[in-house]
Amino acid sequence: MGGEKKQKNKIKVAFPHMGTISIAWAAALRKMGIEPFIPPYTSKRTLSLGTKNSPEAICLPYKLILGNFIEAIEGGTDYVAMITSPGICRLGEYGKNIKNVLKDLGYDANYIELNLYNGFSGMWEFLSKLTGNNNPITIIRAINIAVRKVFAIDEVESFYSYYRAREIHFGDSEKAYKKALKLIDNALTTKELKKALKQGLKEIAKVEINKNKEVLHVDLTGEIFLVLDQFANQNIEKELGRMGVQTRRSLTVSGFLKDAIIPKMCKKGETHLERAFRMAKPYLMRDIGGDALECISDVMYAKEKGTDGLIHVSPFTCMPEIMSQNIFPKMREDVDIPILSLIMDEQTGKAGYLTRLEAFVDLMRRKKMKNKLALKIN
Ligand code: SF4
Image (tube, rainbow, N blue to C red; front, side, top):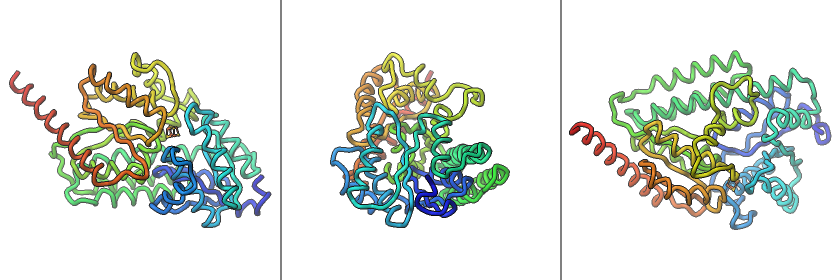
């Protein structure tokens, strides 16, 4: 298939953005001898291209992905690769729609699907179909480096979150974090990756912080794309960091991979999905698509961990997350943890959204002080 359009070593393949995921895709493609085509990071232009060519009520990730593909094709990619799912939610329809829209717009790029929900075999099938290379060693190496980069990035992200909430000079930890990502991106082998991760964490650890600062801890949950993509969530973690809040993402790509790709014998402990089935009861008894089951269980998990609050971010019209938002009021009656639900779409203005964040942070701070005081009195 790879040879249909160009010489194998010249094929350019683009994936849509979702936070920093392009680093992992790029590593897998390079290992297979393909040139990763990284479209410009999502911008207002991307959003406007996507929105213009999308049904009005479709969820925000669809619009952003379509915009990424249009920009990738304009930039000269040969293939656009889309993740699909058999899904109960709209993700199951994304692929077919996007393929048709690109065709209607007259774009000349091959469209290829990756069914990540088929786990390891889905990834294998995708890479071999794309390159015509069935060499198991090459494919395993490609998957291995991509998965390891995902884990490395998640480790860096959570380290960064600690420093961002405590930094003395605003922006220092972000600069160090970007350096760490660059190091991880440049690593070509697992040995180099280990070194890059160590060096990246060192860079972040150099940032001057106030270790005694009273920070708040917030769990971030919701629809996975919105949780991970800083354009889609309007850089929520950076804003919270500025307000002295350390965030912990309840949904991560490494967590997803543990459930979707990594073989059982290589996993340690309970995965996020396993925990979700255990902790979402009795509020939600089964998987209803998207990340709803995980979100409901994340409230209970946040409570168990003593987190100061939980923020739920989701796209406007996202069906599974509409269900979660309707379950939260009942949970609030039983579980004493502040929950803020933020619904995002292309109309969401930054000022109003920041006001809601500030008010929520204020509420958590007052609640924390009240609890402290009550403890002292007792
Ligand atoms: S989970 Fe929600 S936002 Fe994501 S694809 Fe499904 S319906 Fe759309």
